[in-house]
Length: 111
Length: 115
Image (cartoon, rainbow over all chains, first blue to last red; front, side, top):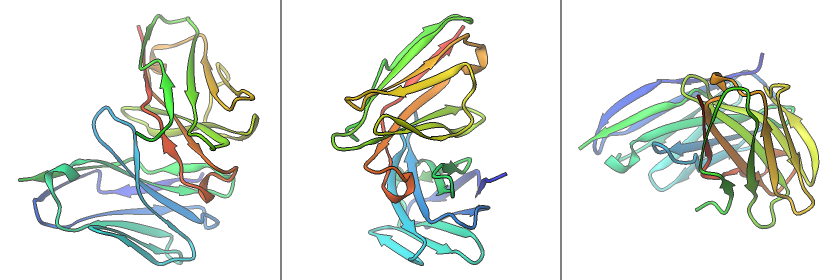
């Protein structure tokens, strides 16, 4: 069935380093790919998204890249800070209009 | 604050019982989505409503049902509760019918504990 695979499940980096989270999706008709950040016990917050007609999008320290041919997209966080520590979820909108989420990546930024 | 509100914040109930979770979307949003988040299951899409009509269905159990009212608020009804139904239930809203054409904003969630 349709799914979104997300890797790694946990990621630990030193403050100031970069972090990269990768996702692959199965529905080739998917055309919208948001990323959410979820702090412990709180709601998922939309941090960036990309549509299928764009290959890359950047917002300050956060960037997302999309490779439609390979059906994968990635989140890049540069100059990480302790407040970036959270669980990050990727998602892909499938042809039926459902947002399919990856399993999440727990990012830990050590000061 | 996303502008999406959910009540109650916490709910503790016994197996076999029935509960109702409530969600009010952001002003101007016509679509409401319900998600279940368990520790080992991630975020699972349950159901979507657009302007009062069911639009998409995910892995929603037959014991669960939802509706969207004329004022656009939505309710998720969970019945014959089981221990495995314990989870965080999130509501999200967006402007349009096609969820991915418009950003989805999440409410603070309702934590359901079934004992």
